Length: 605
Image: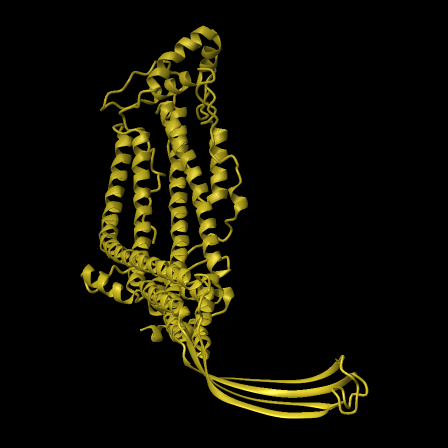
């Protein structure tokens, strides 16, 4: 299995080269870039190649070695003696006791280890280390697939979150716009405006967080690939929900304990640590070598003549370390402790593999059920939002109820998107735990993607700088929002920001200039007459610094004279009753469809 995987990664790098880097968008192309750029994977590859060299290094100590040396020397001699200098004495022939001469020679030595238990133990340790390095390299390759896929789908998930947030923002803005206009004419209390404004501001903060999540997840992918991707192929509307085969978690665990590359690496690392004990323990044993040598030397003329010698030797050499200050004993104990640590690490890896296998299997099974449940929850929340909107129209529901129902729907859609990505990640994690994750899985998942998907290419950190969001309303004890001028400004800013054409479809009740009758609170079946609506709007607008101006309507001189003749006190008193009654939501369906512009969101396809 290990021999099959190693060339697969190398060949896969070429097989996945479908396009240039500039067009890298889908998962296959991104992984192809990661193969050539990820430093973690390349470090594992270098470590594997390095460990492979330990075998010939260790084997070299068991093979014959041949050494040769040569020399040419100029020598000086100064011979002094206390003896008499005679023709037949000690210094006979030495006319000058100080002289120099040239010498040269060479020697050849051949040795062959006969018995060296430490060298054999080193070779066994090196072979175990190579197998551990191969398993670690294969695990790194599978980890690269998992890390790249996870980073890729984290970006898609962040983009989906932003899409739903933007859609929720547009719908909330329309509701904020409508409730302000309804408040102007006294159809809803100011609490509805506050609730819609608070919800809109919260969504602005959520939108900023969603944009920042996109930037950060793109940085995570750049850490692996070295490339900052701004446009990636996204999931199709639905992903195939496939139950693991076989549908038995114990069989997956059994496969993982046999094939997981990290577990295999831990096992071979423990074997290498065991061989290290043999290496250190054999440090006090003798070594036996067969040796042979040849030496030749020659000197130039000296006072005693010239020399020319040839010496050959052959035999067996024994070396026995007698005492080294307790070094061998200490190194042996250290190796034993290292081996125990390697066994414990193997057990840690084993338990982690079993846990990961079971959890990944459970996540897949639960993920399939969650995705199916999310689909039904979206349908249910859509129906709930529609019914809440209808209840708001007839006065049985408040704006807070509408906002909550809308938020629940978008939260369900976000959860549906996240559960799909979690299902894909769990599938990859299960195959990685079982040791079966391969390039074919990348190609299969890549078939679930489509490039026909909008992207957020222009999102940068500069776009996250603090700014006053559109539709912001200062609350300082006065109601400064809700005027025609501000609503128009909000509409224009929204159109520029989102391209939406959202405009309120609420229609203010018609007014007549002659009616001065104070409005009464209508019953459930009552209908607001034009005269009553006019009086409510007029008296509400007369309260200073409380309500915004009503929409412009024709006013007769009689109405103007009546308004100007009132004192400040009378104006305040006359505004009290209608204003109080305006705080009570009317149970009557207003004239016109007040929420016809509410955009009912749909699941992202």
